[in-house]
Length: 489
Image (cartoon, rainbow, N blue to C red):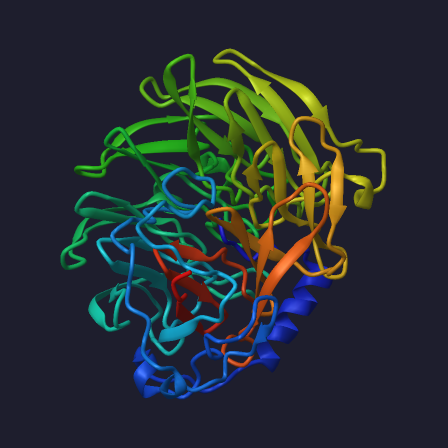
């Protein structure tokens, strides 16, 4: 998910200051690198240098052609839910300064989109629209020009003053694309023109009492079904004030599956309210299992039967705490984490139960926890997790943790929150203030080999992990998406 998981008092103050203090006028349409003067620094910068993003594109010898962009990024964190860029024919030099090939002004929301067939799909809520609408656009990955744009009215007001746009990423399956709005509107459209095929107002249908930040999950498409966390409550709870999740009870709709063809309900299951994490699949005993990190539990669900196989309790004992990261899977082991109190746990799982391999000490200091995931999900490489740990700045850092034991190998000491994507043998670390770092993953030390500063083009918060397609990289701030082109190695 990419959701405004602020830590309420301190984090809310920080982010609200960012929103108020960083406004800038934006162009009204996507612009290519050839007609705007703020593409990133020249490609001749040496590895490890800082590119500020303000060298005009006209000074580059030529625009970098698209290579390897036939691959797809069909959902949140990519095809395999792991934040790993798909293999392609491209061989970029990630240490050389990229060109900004186009800029897309975006409305309210926090996530990046999905990509298929060299088309980028972005889901947001235009700031100027009245009445308010959620918008899905298809954008040519090469030029940044719109192919189509569709809108749908919505009604949502954030309880803590965060933006009222979508938090999640559209999911793509063949000729269909599915969005899950901040208001719980689940919509399936045709990828060719954006025409609506079906929609379900899940908040209304299942009696969802509004949580702190709206719907933060992205949809999962599997076996002809669209599966989303809903977390409704019974009729007698509908008069309870929004946000009072300590007073509502679940009604068996923690996870709901809809038919991809027509939107009809296939099944519902789970006695829990919704968290902000997105569901994913794993394989157990030769079968596909769906994992859903809900408000109070991690659920394992048989998607064919619509049945909960087991659940594991994991949430801080605070009203405002949230579960937001996507579970990380390695064979029959599952890692989950939160940042408010209980930290992380690694589970050994079967189709019948989950058992603890290691877990953070709840009685110990928060800084002593192995990993405290807030809204970003770490990347697992060769038995080590690399990702952001912590709730706020300066309580956060980028660190390496041994997956099997929870041993912290190192911390980078930046004290900034970040998201991460793996590109080949390297990591792209995007911090929330628009610095993109290229890091070599090694358990022995933090090894940064390049850094590119886009703070002259992106206003915070930059919370979404980079989306990588061939030699193109999509990053975003509060009001813009940049498409970066990296030169060949």
